[in-house]
Image (cartoon, rainbow, N blue to C red; front, side, top):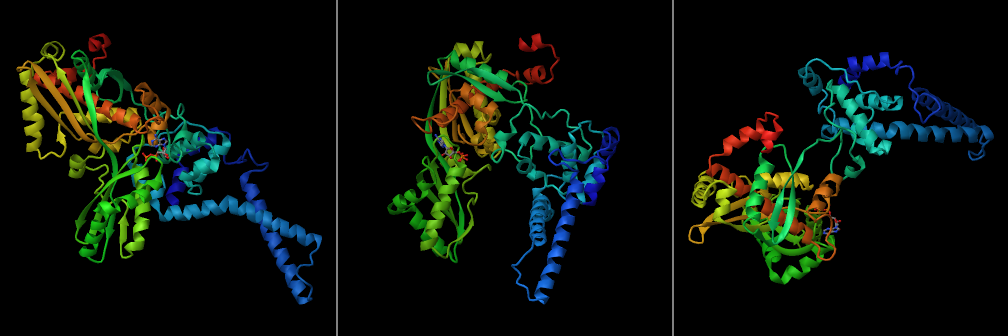
Length: 554
Ligand code: ADP
């Protein structure tokens, strides 16, 4: 609390008070006829006076044996005053007080520097305090002071104010004053903060701008796609674009979705390993599948249980559920289905102790062999035959060099490195850029980028067969970040925005094939650059820009 008070007294605040015509003097809320401090005092006094008066009256009545329910006008007024002031005081201080107690116990929930002792050292490291110039209406200034003083938890701003843009602005100014840092480069306006409330991001203070480039047309399965890529890496879009060109001029790429199922694996513990084995047998028995499906599928009209696969570690059992999830990436859906089944199992297995709904055998956002082998999300293979002439003219290399490079780098090199699913040149570059542009969960880039790139010479050694096999592309076109305006626009560009009404799941599967197609183009181009020894040269050109746009464009 002391730290916070100290921050309120930063030069920024002091300056604000001085130049602003005295915030300290005029603290009236626009919504109240009196300054908040005076209103608080008034209601506190009313509360005390009513209480004292009523207590006295009741004592007198008890002494004189007068029934308590016989009340005069003065008593009615006092009761009314007591109730009114109680309501006011509780709504004004009660919630904030409880929250401040909770937040001081649970520092993880507070956006302000996580410990009261950490703040000074952190701020002292920040160097001389700048004076944030942002000036707010008086009412908002008052809320900023409450946030800085710990009287208003920052995470409650949206619900208290009922205005997400205003809440973000106030939080941002409070942060600016707390740290002495000017957030000028981080835009606040131009974003719909209502659209992220309770879904995408908490405690917002602005948004990061990312350029979106376009690679294409990517000719895939007989259709053309312009692939949006959000990235700050120079060369990446240009390189993918070149790969798209080589694919298009060779007649296009083909893709297949091999599997489509999201997974979740709770961890449960039994008193003994033999009991854990009993549940494993029950879960994997084909006779029980229909029962489990009915219970699981209640989670959503789109969730359909596909299979259950268990692993045991001593008396701990990991049950990996796989289900189709329509056009949603599906983590929420599958988790709800798993919870239904766990509740059901508790009847027949009362000694089952559910340790966690996610026991890491799922496996979400971590490199894991289970995803590489079994798949997670969409498993996709994508291939193309690049003509010899195109390899020479567009990619500036030859088939033999490419095949040799792929073997030594992507296959042998990754084996030497002990790679898990990393038998590729830079799949994650393309996956991440498309994920960010289309509102996917970027953390799932970990397993979504698992990819083996294969290159072979065909047609007597003249042409190149290239393929990427990606077993766990985790994408959706509904839910999460996909509904935000910019991301939805990128999905729309690909023709996969939202739910596919006639064939639920078709949009998400199509998006997965576009991701794989983009990776195919990216692999083709980067391998070609390396085979031709161009890599360093082109990076120097795009990443160390001379600002000569005409040269770069060329
Ligand atoms: P996730 O499970 O990927 O976290 P959400 O639960 O946030 O996704 O979003 C899925 C929601 O979208 C569900 O409420 C579901 O009923 C709804 N929905 C609408 N159309 C579809 C569709 N075609 N496929 C999947 N879910 C859909």
